[in-house]
Length: 366
Image (tube, rainbow, N blue to C red; front, side, top):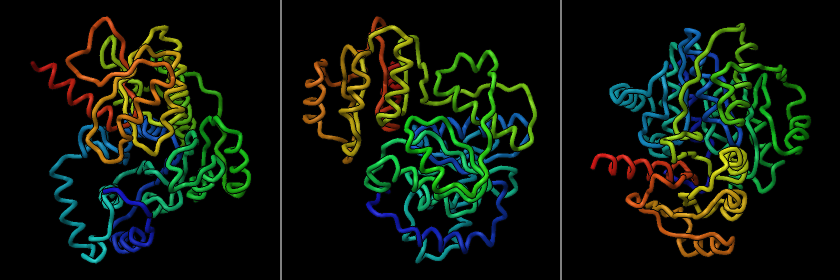
């Protein structure tokens, strides 16, 4: 399921075989550090509203694997997954199937299921040019906000990470609002021969104007893409996004963000809330969690560490030490201690949100 090195040859060999059984629709590839999931879902949902047949592939999931493959407005059904799995196992040799990673195999499932669709919206995993989703030629690339994350695989500077992601662009592209000037410089160097879609001024409808600013920006990118694709002005409804500044209740906000870039955009929203939050948190040890906590610190009264059963998590003692060094109170999280008079931000990763939701829903049943 997890890997230390990307072997692009395996997914390439697999797709070379599978591609003889699939005619791909128009491919929109979404790469970047933050905002891929929300941008992809907005785009896919609005295309469905425009009567288009769409498959949206995203990762990771929060509660159910089926979330990763969204077809025409719904998560893929178990029956469809089972049927496709059996078909892939007839097409691909065991010598390749045994070597594919969890993500690579899921990508092949999505590619196979995109048959007979009008659009395939492919969200890259952690990479760009060597990501499994880049095994197919894309018609359009959406490059979302780029920052530092997954340095072990992508490089330890914004420029290196931007280079890796932008080299996945095959044809036209649109660049989302960026936080680092280095991204613009890399774009000039790498994408000089590609067509850049102009970002026109967009006035959002009343419903969209109430979204968090970072989600408004992602929606504006989507509306620009739709204009480029030939869809003129139209009425649209905003889909609910699972785990993206989601207000689960009057006092609980969920967000799957997990890096400093995500913390910055969340901090801007918390500033508008004008409340002190208890942060329900945990993190993988390879994340810059000290920087994340420092960014959120002005809006926090306490940090509560939620247990996540994963070997990649930072040690509890190390995390507590960092939290205390920032003059923040720290405790272990327990769902039974949630109080209506307190405000909670659940943040840190998809895994954090998943564990919180499972506990929260069980507690609500009692």
